[in-house]
Image (cartoon, rainbow, N blue to C red; front, side, top):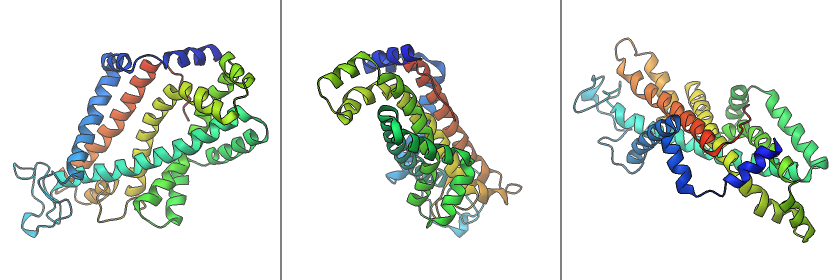
Length: 293
């Protein structure tokens, strides 16, 4: 394990262009990247107001229209364009997922790196907190937190972030336990370099490959968790569209307007599959050993 981590540290210095070329030659990675880029592009168009319709604008004369040239995914019971709503839902779902993943990564990696490097009482405390969080089913923990916090997109992000903090703690702590004993770290200690400087200059850069893969996979889990919360009525509050809440709304009308379920359902499935394929591709390209929950 130690030799593998040291090899990964050396591989981290390879030119980024070589790694991108290798990713594009990886079947899963290339397909996942293309899917994610297409979904993100749709969200970007919505974010900058480039979709043909306002996702919140109601038109009673266009209620429950099937897919057509004017409305590619049809309209809902309020006459709102479903394609524009799916694009806006992608923005809201990704916004929550990205913020949650970033928060959990910053907190989890910081605690994991310091726990693995400093050891002692700090390591014991961090490990105990991590084990307590792991003891709760992830969705149940997110539901509990989302139900006690005021409902807005940021508090939903916090609820999702707490779920993934222990994952990043474990992902970061393991490699640090091996890296803290390598020669260049011992040499840095001998020169009088402080722990935080060693962590910043020698530890963090050498676990970047593992962190990148885990960020990608955690982002897919965060998307699914946010969609689950929205489906259960505890996600992004209306009228802002969310993929999970759109799936819920379309269920009651699926027998008379099945197109309402197709759009958000396919977007959600493709986004999760794309992120997982991209994560698997990055794992192969960066040659890291993942520690799954």
